[in-house]
Each structure stands twice: as C-alpha cells, then as structure tokens.
Length: 231
Image (cartoon, rainbow, N blue to C red):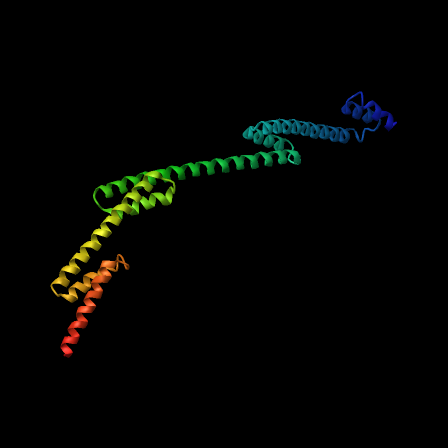
C-alpha cells in the first residue's frame, strides 16, 4: 500500500498524500504533514538560493562584482549551508580585491610620477637660477639631482656640460694665476712664497710642466745658496 501511495505522490501533492495516509493512520497525520511542509520549505529555500547563485555567477562573469556579492549574500541568507553561494561570493570578493589593489597601485604610480616631474621642474629652475648668479657649484648639484631623477634629461645634460667647460676654464685660470704669482715671487727671490704658489698648483694639476720647472728652479737656487754659504 505504501508503494502505491508513493506512486500517487507523483500526481498529487505530498500534503494530499499525507491526508490520505492520515485517514488510515490518524496518529501520524500531523507529524507527517509537518515533515512534508518542512521539506517543502527547505526545497523552496534551496531553489531560491540556486537561482540567486545563478544570477550571482552571471553578474560575476560580466564583471558586476557588487551585484554578484549582493546576490550571493541573498543566497547565503536564504540557505546558509549552500556552499556554491559562498564560493561565488569569495570569487567576487577576490576579484574585487585585485581590481582595487591594481587601482591603488596605478594611483600610487601616477602620484609618484607627478611628484617626480615636480621635483625635476623645481631642480631645473633652481639650477638655472643659480647658474645665472654664477653659483656654479650649487648649480651643478641641482642639475645632478635632475639626472638622478631622469638620467635622459637633455636640459640637465646640456647645462652640466656647460658647467664642466666653465669649471675647466676657471681651473685653468686659477692655475695660470698661481704660476704667474710663483714666477713673480721667484723673480724677486722670494723662494718660500714662490714655492707655496707652485705647490698649490699641484692641487689642480700634478703634471703641469711650468709648475714642475718652477719647483726645480727653486730647488736649484736653494742648492746654489747652500753651496755659497759653505764656501
């Protein structure tokens, strides 16, 4: 008889079947109805959760992450133990996290590039201002700062080349001035003063021939003076 009733269940509702059974077994009618109603409720919740997860998956596939998370949350609320809902939600959250991290990295890079450009612009302006005021060492420092930030910066390279030429010219002028002073003191027989000037030249150019000649002449004169004293 029970098998026959299960066959009937395929064409009538479970509640109707329970009522038919209850007419024969009155002591189980209420319990059976409760079980069947609970089962029906669970099935409805599960079907709702499945539909919501399907919507969440579609939203995820289209990149509508907030919508996917919302639908997955609704599915979890409807059926907390439905694992697929949690899986879809986690996938959406992970994808959203990666997008947010990429966006933050992009913004950080843009900010760094903007800051770098501003630093280069300020350093170039300062370098040019210092150059125009003949503060060549400070100007060189600023243009070197630009090169550290932007190794290919043509303006900084051009100015550094120009500064190198100016410094080379100044160095040569300094050397020539010291040699002239050394020769002048030598002509006056002020050997100590002359030697100081020639030795100072060595700080700029250890191989300067005029400087070496002057120092040799001082040594010769001192040797001659020492011999005369011995005589």
